[in-house]
Image (tube, rainbow, N blue to C red; front, top):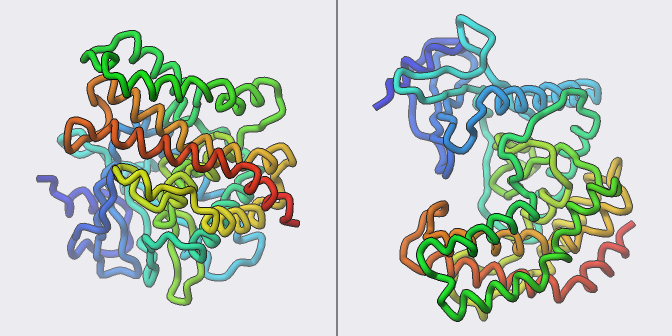
Length: 362
């Protein structure tokens, strides 16, 4: 068991550490609240360096982003800035913002924002909040002078993900290519491969820029104040260069699906246009200062790309013998594949409706 009090005390905190208690239910990082006798409590977080292998890059990215946002808020005369951007703490004996414990774990600390809430609710109201908040987040970083790195290379590169599937099919490690349904799903994926790789082609042609994106856009990655107003975007580990399609499409992949991504109830899956419209309204409002016509006109494509990409990832893992995603039963990844493939088709069928709606927004 880690000595959490000792680890917390290595950071330059204002006040003495009184106690350290678990905070939240994150899937990647273990998070704790550090109570002190000073003016602030703090968050102590174990960085999962199996996922984020370059911790220096990770922390440099986050510091560049939070410092730039702080400057923007200061220039705008925004009140209560310390509640609207995360503030990371450095070690007592160096300017590094992470510590390494005796067992080789990486830890960081930042000021705890009091009287702030997160929500799990996915409805049109909160989807609109999310669209605006993540759009404004991208807008504030559109002129970031620092070069930040890809903490997870090729994270949202569909050509890379399809190549992983091709490799899985060739190797067929556990003999699953003999299953008739596997061949049917593979043919369905292949039918849309060229069309779904449009983003990478557009980037190579120079018509699609890379932006600084959050890359994990969920309702619960925002903090709200007691009045229901968004304070700030949190969980910045995946912030990196990507297409705006990442933040737009990934939110809708999970929010516009009426069921969980591993639900076998395919008849209940229908891409929710009420969620799409609410999120899109907020997102276009938030990105108005920089979003290009090409980016805007391809947002319906982005809404299809992400369930397609997740279909490919779940399916490749199933063929590989379930080596990446945790499973609860042997066909878990196949069920996830069916689910995301159905969501993709539902979204794809609604491209004309999505396009009409976006064209109607001023």
